[in-house]
Length: 99
Image 1 (cartoon, helix red, strand yellow):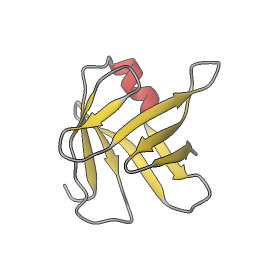
Image 2: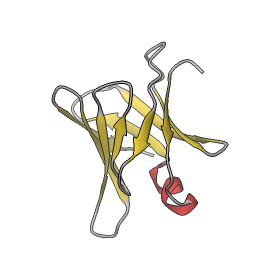
Image 3: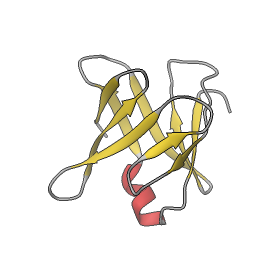
């Protein structure tokens, strides 16, 4: 499963579906895709080979890696729609949901 970041989560299915989509790094062309494979939420990096890292849900929209120093958090608007991700890994990067 090259190019996947596996997210093990105890979130309900409706909340997981809200996270699915394509995200683009703010001010950059780099993209990631959030996908559901069976019952595992996955982050796919189409431009990078061999970047698999497991992360676990620590809150409804916040995750933490057990293998790497990364903490992705999904962002929501006033209507509770997922609009992006911030990832804290030696600094904060912002990813905007584009689909």
